[in-house]
Amino acid sequence: MKKLHSLVLLLISFAGYSQADTSLVRFSNPTSVSKTKGYSHAAEIELGTCKMIIISGQIALDNKGNLIGKDNLAEQTTQIFTNIKNIVAESGGTLENVVKLGIFMIDASQVQTVRNVRDKFFTQKKMPASTLVQVSKLVRDDLLLEIEATAIIPKF
Image 1: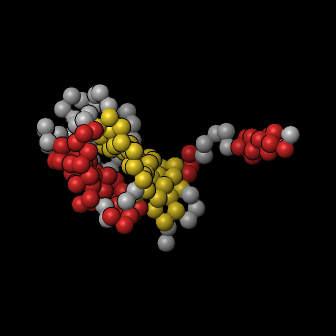
Image 2: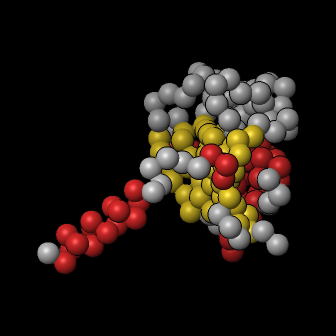
């Protein structure tokens, strides 16, 4: 009975949050990354003393929409982490603020190449939490991976 009572209280406390307060969210498409079609590169959520940046999956396109690194996993990974770095910087942060990466690869056996590039962008002492998923296909046939990220940027 005590568990049921706790559950009811929890549900009541969430009832006031049934609609998102969009004034706390800012969607952005920095000019340092490619133009989007039907989505935003990032959603910035105000959390009081900090803000959370949720970054859409990045692919190896430069700010003009050109593929970087055709058939080259290291070059595609470098472009993707450059895009993530630029998006985080647009919100006032650095890659040290990235707390989570989601990596989607066509061939997960090549993960060491991704790690080698990642290690040029992130310090070993502050590695973000990470998920790796092997997928059968990405949005374009010439893409080898896609990476999404989440950052928490403190306000000073």
